[in-house]
Length: 72
Image (cartoon, rainbow, N blue to C red; front, side, top):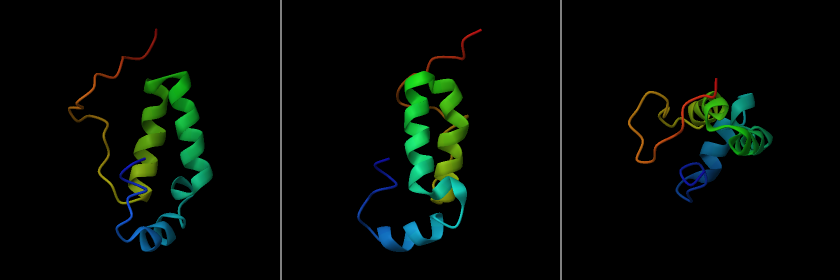
């Protein structure tokens, strides 16, 4: 969220991102809510939002904080 809402050229990036469903504010809100359910199920939503905002996907990278694995 911090990378998406940084003040540098926010309006230009918002216009570009809003062309994709994953770049709209409602999608960001849904991804945030999904984090309260499961970090695992939120990963695809977060990656889609990051892609719409032209940010690098975090899935498959080394994160500074350990995300728990999916529940079986």
